[in-house]
Image 1 (cartoon, helix red, strand yellow):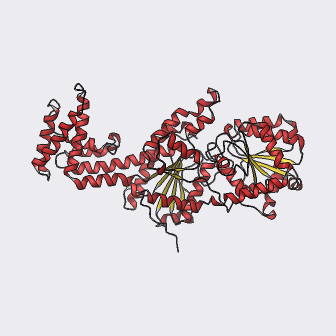
Image 2 (image 1 turned 90 degrees about the vertical axis):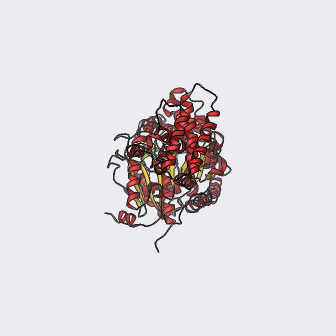
Image 3 (image 1 turned 180 degrees about the horizontal axis):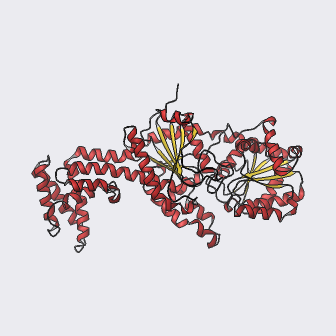
Length: 587
């Protein structure tokens, strides 16, 4: 057992669960991304570290059962980000990577495994599964589906327990055992009153008996063995049943009659036992400790792609994604929005009340993303020199332009290369480094684009995955960070560049830039090659303007602090009714 594992297992800190399900989430995340891996994963790891610093024990659940992005190991055994933060890999969907647009096929299997895992650990600590975590924060729609369904399952547990207690005196043992066994298939927690009434009626008389007579016989027999006043019970139940039947206009719908009467009878029985009714309502509420962080929304992304041809949009499955998101919004208690755009869409397109939305944008890890002194960048300059063949001194004298993100067409690295070709025609002391992997079809198309522009020879380079020790220094030493991305939930890499004291050029589809630093960054219309070329050339030609913009960016991002924002989130959840224990740090 490693020291981190031992520390985690012995910890008595309050626990928090984070679920981030697609991509290669884990302790080692390639900066610049792997397929479906990038800013969201950095966000989750940073949030986990902030919770650790506040005295919590964190489990990050991520899909596993398939090899890591570099193929060096399988994603099976737990990994430890810190002594109080672990990754648990959840199998489901087979032993191969699944892109996020297709991940729905894995969710049922993941749910089963995760529910069993949480139940086992909760039992070891002598508590029900829903009390295992102070709250459960899911990220993106796929994780949110798992989170909402875990809540549904735990609500089923509570409903089954209450129904069993209320009907124990009349329900045969076989039916009681079946009720517990089938509680998830019956969705007891979704309609506990209905199931209570249905079982109450079903257990008495013959199906051929008129429904209202069957109800009367059931309540009379129930009153004989239950601790209730017979006359009061018959009156309460029968009046409720007759009233329900009176509301049904379609006299030719016996199935509908049975539904409304079951609902009414179940409610009447609960009124006969007010204490159990109170417990049921409060316990069903306590179970829901779910908070959803969407990171992006299908309606926003589809709007960004509205001018694209069908063959580009089809693989992104926007309709399916919106349907998942609508289901999550209908069943989720609290939301954390990473941008103003997302917060607005939650309200306008998904019907989420504004008071249920907490604003929690990505923040910057200022221990890594900061202004580095010259001696701290020496090894990174050597790394760039070895990668490019350009002498270290030439790199220092010249200007480095930097971009890193996953190898995805939506990041528009191709546009960045084409814009840089215009810059390279005018200046030979400028070097573009584009990070990210793997060497997929997008990567190969970028190689072809670069090679098709001989004016970029010796000045434009694809780095692949960047070693972690060079990430912070590379952001800092760059003359500017450029992002042409057309599909951003926030723009974490641009925020990190700003926190590193680096000037920024970004598309107008980058929420962080548009909402917070539009006057300090250079904002270019998405898809405008010439616009990006002009912006880069402007900052290269005016060093003083570049320096002043970088310093203003650095000043503005100081408020993006992970620990402070996490404290605000916890306080907000407490105000909204979540019972969250204070963190405990080791003295």
